[in-house]
Length: 419
Image (cartoon, rainbow, N blue to C red):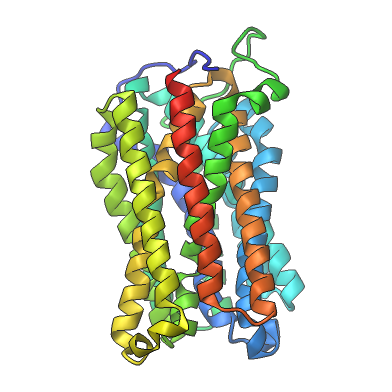
């Protein structure tokens, strides 16, 4: 069921392109700092205890992020529908406070609680930016707008991983996180005047009580939404590996925490390149051609993950001895898998949500909550596998299954949408 859009066509200047996406980029910066710190955290006995618990802690860390993101999307969707893009001001401030508390956390439990708070702050920012896109861009340019939003965020993440990774070699992870928190707090004083000057459109939803306001039950029973929700769950499992690339490089290729943190930026570079090249092409395709392109990319991502399973297995022990080449292969395949699922995760699902008019924030929240819940279950399952003695090969085998399910559901969703 597709609902009419409430978007207002507008001519968008180059300056507004940048201004429109700046707030989400700042929340992304705040969320990257703990991920960069994770490479050092897993070897900090004051936080995680014995070194043998490091893999389980990394999975728990990622699982908490997924669960908090899912919860945050459900809680913030009504706020985003009501406030639109100005919600981002509160999100940036809350992110700064949460990140400062993360840096000062005295124990593993406190650390995870603060990390959950960071992800709740991040959870509503994408939906708020979606409302701004709906109010600012022509409908036919939505895929390109979401591509720009994704790449703005990715540029921040790439720069942050390299810059903060380098900083991590000179200072502790606590000092690094405090520095980012102070940066976010200062940035609010730049963002607020932009709203006051009207440079950022709010995208507030005007509800009319008509067919543009479907109930939650109608949304949950809509077949394309259900299929996209399952596909989003599998795609989220793949994209969540961005937080674990550094850990994989440390534990499998035996790189230092600083080197692994900087090299993990390749994941975002690959996604950035894919979005930059594929999105403009994707925007000009017909419905069926878009489906073929997205399903083909997803299938290629599944193949990359299967290669990772073999690469981390005992049968590839000879490769382990060549640390530089082994690290390059691991990093490259993880980056390739993430980039192949980027179109579905960042662009296609967001455009699909905006086609539901007044319900767009709720549809996006539903899809993302399903995705984050799936990511949480995968992380918990992976943590359990590590706790009973299994390794990355078995965990990546489970990831391959999730990716395959996402590909099948994407195909079914596109077939259902065509009808």
